[in-house]
Image 1 (cartoon, rainbow, N blue to C red):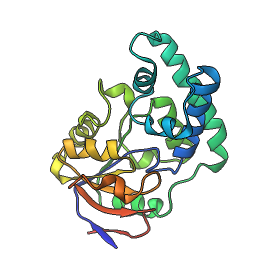
Image 2: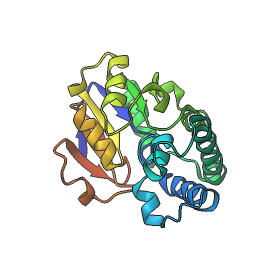
Image 3: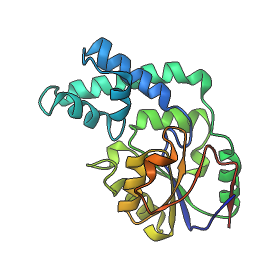
Length: 218
């Protein structure tokens, strides 16, 4: 059991609110290899899955391979394939509904801080009726540099009016935990996409869990 003592909760989205990273990987694998002929293995695709969609494309193909408009087109197409595949399975990670309700009763403000584009964030928040819990949403469009840069979570804290040190971030990826570390925030890690060993270098992790069922608000 992990007790959460914080003035605000900040949530990454994919792999943290919903367990969907496999579906993102499938969509990227399809786009990169079948549409763009990148010739990447499954593991090579998974390694690249962090930050903004455009950043991923630039890491793989270089700065000048695509125009911005083409990257935007590829980004939306990838999300359409992901959403079509994942929609029948769309659900909150176990225990999260109870945590959100408890935080709301305790008047702990909450925010989404994600590298996803608004199109994807809206897909989750609207289909699962979550907007009532998250008055603040920071997306890929709201920062110039994505995770592990701290801006995503710092903007969440600023919008909520909470000192970064008083926030707990919920994350599932090493780059996200690094982002929280760079923002001066503690992190609870969901092991939906990575084992505990992948986070050994971080001193801001307060606990691990496959879901939210063992968490209580202090």
